[in-house]
Length: 81
Image (cartoon, rainbow, N blue to C red):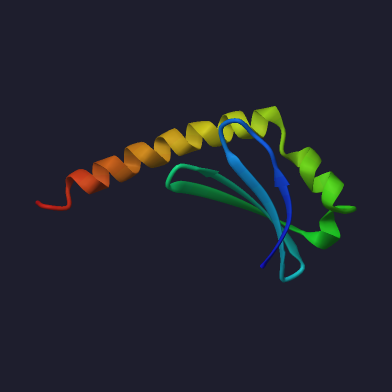
């Protein structure tokens, strides 16, 4: 997997990788990560992938991160049952 672009952001770590004829958009927040894959043949290039990382995508990604944390905390609380 090859890092091709890092998108600066105040809250998230956002990276675009190239791997196996796909672009992978990795968005990290703390210990959690979400990855979106797009075939290189479905876009005209890296610039088009960057345009897909919109404010709305990041807003919804944050909501998923919150859900992921809640799910993890719920599971973690049951580890000693």
